Image (cartoon, rainbow, N blue to C red; front, top):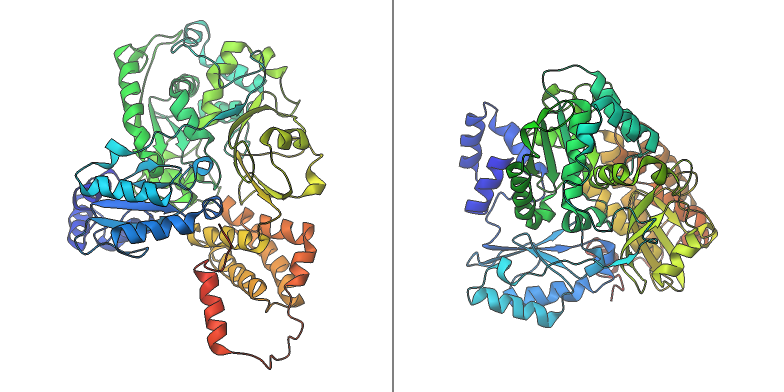
Length: 570
């Protein structure tokens, strides 16, 4: 993938001849390589322009004025979405969530971030580029506001931290003792799977091998989430030191940060920090510890694939393959990257490790709930006064949390992203905890002026696009559910369509091999249970025939749905 990125950056696309040469170099068929190239969103087969513009199509962006921003870009550069200017100067493309939901409308230009866009700002940006400015010279520095954190004695993540402060624990404890501390802390994965971290480390530790790996999953692709990006910006040293503790605990000598392409602008900063750790003897050979060990970290850049947030798909991606999930016959802690024992942990999970050791396990356990001790980071966006990052103590009441955001007249809250749970008023007295409402990190708030079906359509489009396609239930089932939503929006659906949605959702959920298919219909089914009146209103009164059928009008309505033109986004 690094070679593909080098070609993409140099030539702005990967040609047929390029793939022939690369496939020969890596002793693989050209068709196999083409399968890899076409799998990822950010590899292009034709020239994508000297300045490649990606505009977020997440529903939060839609409701923040995306349509006007697209029109402003189209006017400023002179081409429509999905095209490149005749002089190959600009290319304009859509993209899934780019991790800037609290600063929408936003875009990436040559993977540099531009936030809080307006038509006037867009004209100025394009004018400056035409006059010789580079994207990195005029881009914004995304600064998410830390809207809420507990009192200083309860704050875990967003308080001052002195680099290397906790690495003294390496000299005090052996690997088994570190693992026991993490197990006692009940720290669980913070990306959404919530698997016990200490147990994962122990499994990997117990598997003997000549080589082991630690991989940080920084492929934060769930729409509406940006907490990991903020941690990488504010406290990257926590991540590095969390990886060092993981490596010491399991006996790994190589670590990798799988950084999503949308966060490429953070790569240079991270590499500079890694170099500092090497210079100070905290990475590399003979790291000082009770049992001295070797460990170093490199950065692997993703290329745009939501499915690579799943650990086995991520590993395949790092191996230069299509990012397709594996069946779970063998877990990565047994045979992972390069068929060696591998630990894959999320950014927030790894950042929590130094903090737990710093504050002491007992102090950590005193926070939160019995099942989920400590604090949790939530990315809040949508229809609320205070968008940004919230560090809450597990167990907070949902209504108390809503009050913190300043949200009013709420219709629904999408909790833990489109693959999570859709909440309505009946859920607002529940608690955010492992015992009740768990959340990977994304909280999208929608008020009563929003059209529920158009929100669900946006989610469905996302899952259809991001399915890797390896298993039929997910590949075909999500496509068919998308068509059912189209019928509902047009008012052509009938009771049987609602029954089909429920039945097909069960099939997709129970037979898909990974979390994408298993959770892709969650929100749709939640919506049908919690807002039945909306679905009933969209059912056709006469399903036998339609005397007033107009082919031209039907085609126009369908085109509006496909292009999202009928949605009152602004």
